[in-house]
Length: 403
Length: 117
Image: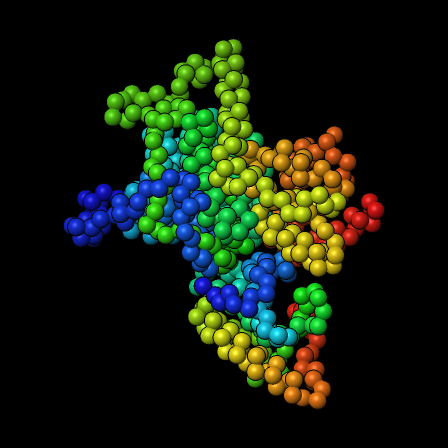
């Protein structure tokens, strides 16, 4: 906040925003080189620590469970001067539209939502990639359909996969600290210039504590350079500003259809170009445990944590089970998955949703490239639990079906 | 941060209801500490049980409510109180092992439960 605003809000005249006292470091230093301290905090608190170090210019919030706590924490950061502007929007379409406007103005923007809020904002969200607006949306997944519940269910992520957004899926509190920072940096790369969503499974990550290793709060990422972008920022000092780079694209004629098609092709090409940056900042688009195994589990989000324990218990009993943790859904790590499961005979895909969007993604990649039998589950939804035993039982069944 | 000494395993809570389980081990005894998701951050707490490990290669255990440490599951509202209990428990387990070695036969001090795998 500005010093005038700060004084109006009761700060002393000599108040200095704490963000101004932070030292800018390179992404490489932030992600890999600075010493880290281990904390035991919730996912919402982990997100707060990421935002503290992300050099955010504008944060716009609108409450919805289980996301509200994170943006409440962002409010505290604004009060301390780590975020320059912060306000509560009128509802999600308003918030997501304002995010687009703020990003077009060339500043670093953050918002967060969950389940039904994501659905409400989807009209504006799906226009972000075409507008080439770098920003980060934190998405804390919950049930979206009737009968309504506030428990974890990530079916909402399936609505994001084909919009041109970059989409990451955090497994735990550590990921929910690391991924937003990486998402900011990648979304603002010139040859990417796209919005990014970091999803996580609500409650299991946001409202539970876990170990998180973070560097000192005296460091922050470099600021966004609005002019270093595939689509230059609007110059609001010199109106009129042009929202669309090429005016004919907004007219319904033959040329506009071609322009729209080529524009969309470029958006999805930019999604693929982001892979090299995510590989660098996330240490790969996937994590593979026990490569070469005949039994494999492919999962993202909380399902990975449950699968890890299943893999460990199988190991205790002398059975090797492989695990592919998919960190990044867009771009989807096709080559990595094909390579990881090349020797697999059986593949399980545990998911926290009814639709089985990960299973469909994996099947589309492995069709004609793998001889493995891919199980259609296990799946839980609506807030159901996925005990480790469920994955172990599915593994046993898969072995019986395909010896 | 919670104590890392004698930490045998840190895993997702296997029942699938979210949260984390820390398993500590000193000789044949140990402590299970579970932190689950709660609707409000201030409600998050530690569910703690004294446990006795089975004498087998796999990690398997049962709650043990016959020690002087606890006759029932315990609840701690913060890391500090958990750490204090752990330090006390580690000393107790070390002494208990010495005492049990003095006995002609070790007594079965555990009872069956569904918590152990």
